[in-house]
Amino acid sequence: MPIHRLPPSLINKIAAGEVIERPASVVKELMENAVDAGATRIDVRVEGGGAEMIRVVDNGGGIAADDLPLAVASHATSKLAEADDLFRVATLGFRGEALASIAEVSRLAIRSRTAESESGAEIEVVGGSASEVSPCGCPVGTTVEVRNLFFNTPVRRKFLRSKQTEMGHTSEAFTRIALARPHVHFTLGHNDRQALDLAAGQDGRERIASVAGRSLAEGLIWVESTHGDVQLSGYVAHPSHSRGNSRMQYLFLNGRYIRDRALQHALSEAYRGLLMTGRYPIAFLWLAMPPELVDVNVHPTKLEVRFQNADRLYSQLLSTLRAKFLSTDLTARVESLPDDDPTGAHDEGQTAQVRQQVVDWAKGEIASWGRQSAPGADDGGAASLGPRVSPPQTAPLELTRLDRAWAPAAEDEPDEEPPPGAHATSPAPGSFPDVPVKAMQVHNRYLVTETDEGVMVIDQHALHERILYEQLKGRVMSGAVESQSLLVPEPVDLSPAEAAAVLEHRELLAKLGMRIEPFGGDTILVAGYPAMLANMNPAEVLHGLVDRLVSGGKLPDQRDLLDELLHTIACKAAVKAGDRLAPEEIEALLKRRHLIDDAHHCPHGRPAAVVLSREELDRQFKRV
Ligand code: ADP
Ligand code: MG
Image 1: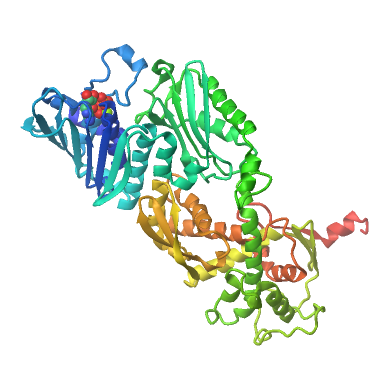
Image 2 (image 1 turned 90 degrees about the vertical axis):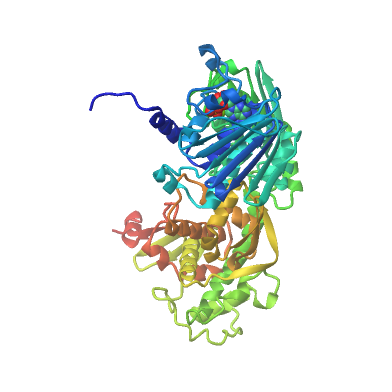
């Protein structure tokens, strides 16, 4: 085929493909234009997650009537005059292709008026073909309305996800710009609902509180430093707050939200030893430097930039945070927080107490196996699942009795009666009901037991996790996960993307016993949660699940997701290395050890059991 120049409309479609990925990209570009126009108030309204309609109204400088056709033409901008300007960009936009790209793949209308002009003017562009400019009445500033995004690019349209998910992305785009410019008044409305109203002149912390929740904002630590021309200021979260991914790391460079791997790494380094592996710090950091020290023209949506002196910036961030952490008595703060780990180590502290409760629950759970004689015919051991406030049904005693029923060789406390029906219980296939289990716990983490072949050393956590996983899965499959209703539904603050993900996966979560209601904004209500996690804080359970839902670029398939969630719950609920187990508990666990016989590995890939064969032992002791 001969080489030929592409027609402008095709060029624009190609550009649109890079820049306009989904409604959120449109919101970003339009808001950036409004900010560049010097607006002090920007109102964003979307319908149908943004796919149906996006309107951005600003009170900025406006566009002169004569300039309107140029505004929607490609490679037309008022922000660069000469080549050198590209190396000192002080505006958010500069390529002059956003409006043209959007106009190519939607129905776009602009109404605008400058302060000098008596009246306004408007232009409409449908799928790239522009109308004449006509006069209209409007206040000073600009209104851009985008309807039917991707109406003429069906492939793109097909890739749009549910309205809720798109709205999640849209509010994340909104949030990034709103955080980057705390002094500007922003509002966000979705359909008929006012989602956010962020007053002008908020300081950073207030703005963070408005978009990310008050509880998070209150615990933030202020950091600042100036090295030469580079100023750094903002907030980082106390180590007791962290996330399972890096989404809550907001970095702003000269008022622009950016992602930067090196700086994210510096953050992680600063928190080294303060967070568990796999946890990410939360940060809101504003960087200011002369524009010539950074190249913003390296990424289609300008999400990434190139710093002239990346190394120096890295050390500035790291040293600022380290110095702050050294001078802040993190330990003291941790102790004053109710649930925390006195070592101040990390958010594992919060789980210390929970863990104990979970262990208690787990004991009850083990005990309840005995009662599950006829599948579906019992209450799933509900009595032992609730919070441990009703002593008559609590776990350990039950456990002792039930296990004696299973394992008659246990000889202490002979006066206890097995509960009615327990003897009739037929054991699960593959368990070892009649053989007394000879076993001991060592270092509060391994169970050592005799097998036909030799000696087996079992990781107690891995085994219990496996047992709970199988059990949970059975219940999920039979639709029998009990959900404990909360008398007063508990509100949980999430980021917009998290809230959207949670709402989108409501049904799936409901299968797991987690009942979710929308509340408004990015707050959601937990109305019920898995009874088996009754001793854990609903917010914490939800946060754990949310991290799974939003991590990873592409959405996992339902089955995988369910499976992962089951693993997460099982892992949280299982006894941990370091938990001392009662002999009955050891026995109860070992009765199900066939579960790790099938799969010798815990879901993290570590071996769950190690077998020393008799021959091996004989060899070691020089008996052969
Ligand atoms: P860029 O922002 O890269 O210049 P755009 O296609 O986004 O390119 O916008 C083209 C031009 O239209 C801008 O340079 C600006 O002059 C004008 N413009 C767009 N939106 C607005 C607005 N909200 N207020 C004032 N001028 C605007
Ligand atoms: Mg622009």
